[in-house]
Amino acid sequence: EVQLVESGGGSVQPGGSLRLSCAVSGITVTSNYFSWVRQAPGKGLEWVSIIYRSGSKYYADSVKGRFSISREDSDNTLHLHMNSLRAEDSAVYYCVRDQWYYLDRSGYYAFDHWGQGILVTVSS
Amino acid sequence: DIQMTQSPSSLAASVGDRVSITCRASQSLYNSLNWYQQKPGRAPKLLIYAASTLNSGVPSRFSGVGSGTHFTLTISSLQPEDFATYYCQQSYDTPRRTFGQGTKVEI
Image (cartoon, rainbow over all chains, first blue to last red):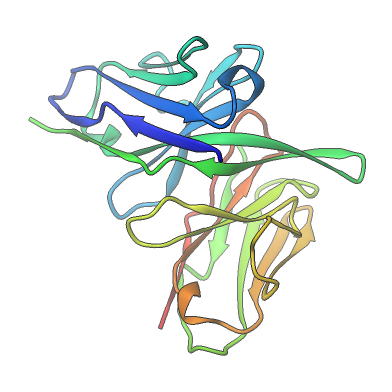
């Protein structure tokens, strides 16, 4: 059974830093794509960052230069390092597996497994 | 960046109703469109990928159609457990995975 369990959330002051972790079981972090998705209170879903099997990393413009995604292969864990945090970064952060499907000679991606989410609050 | 627009933002329906939600993209996605269901306090759940393929375990009352820039999620007979917020997501513009703003289905 695939499980994604986030940790490391909490309250931090503006300008501060936080590191989120996602413990993965049932699959390996090196064989899959993973993203972080966030949801501000009462708002919709926002894709934040992705790490490919190759180790390539990409970020939403809203977090580029401040957030960094990484993985620890030995622990089968993902991380999201968040620096220079702002009030607008307050959200529930989800770790998700980005699954690739092959249909009718074409490939498609979708988030098929989600963690339970972890709350980050940025406030003075 | 590809913009995703869902309509309506919310709707009220009764058990047994047929409900449809529309998602429009600012440029063609071909079939790279996913639908998710989210209940309060829970993580989203994948319902449909590639515009019309039901994810494993999803009831057949859910269906998706569309291609290009216009997509529709339909629930053929609304059940009590279907009251939730539904999101579309494009997966054409990789690595970005833009979501629509959501549609809340209420009683």
